Image (cartoon, rainbow, N blue to C red; front, side):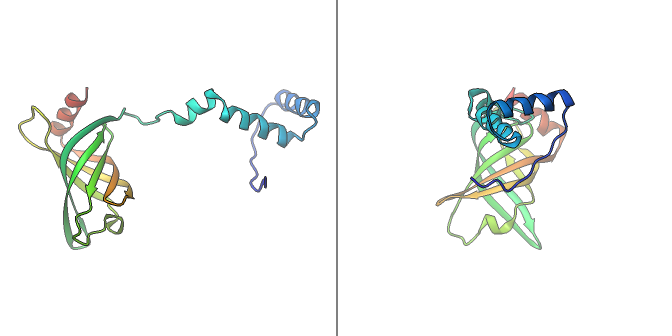
Length: 164
């Protein structure tokens, strides 16, 4: 395996001596020893738990709510029917079906857009301004991930009480 990237880190003299001692005992270079220790850790259950841990600030909840996304690309406005698939107080994931109208969400670069949706037991629709983070295209739809940019206090409080 080719090792073409160099990583450097600071440590105490005592720790450095211990690492060199273990490397010599195992008849490998210091770099090889550190690489083996890190590889073993990443393949262990503890390493996998850390790698798979959800680092979001707010926990995601899987939902199925109809929504409309709207925005503007240059001088052209757009509206798309969509479905919320998961939601948190920090962001949203939407599925937008491809409907053969020639619209390509990947080309639109959804930077800033609004999401409008209704929550059960709420009298008025929720409107949240979002910042597009990713658009993933499948054969029949687009999956759009976005973080919340701005919302009015009433919408945010309604969302908060719905989620928690």
